[in-house]
Image (cartoon, rainbow, N blue to C red; front, side, top):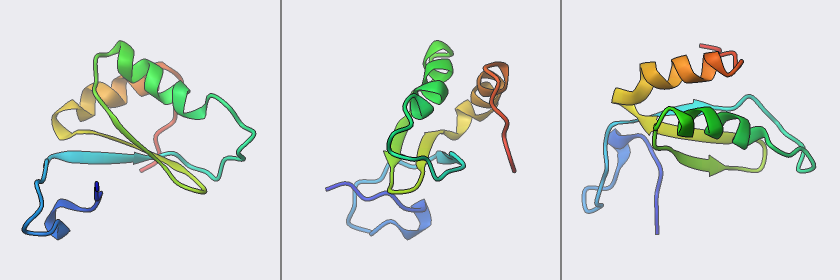
Length: 85
């Protein structure tokens, strides 16, 4: 079983990989819409940035390692994405 949570809330007995940050795609996206996640993952892959993706009923999340943040932001902006803070 995998549990995704803020690292400060991870169970003490869990094997934890720390240092992730999360980008939330502004949804909701209808199930018939295709290519949303791919439009984000392609520029990240081209920039050699590893990701962990999560999809829920109404939106998607992309987690990257904290040390890749600036590189990821640059790649996403260059690909035409707008980041909302």
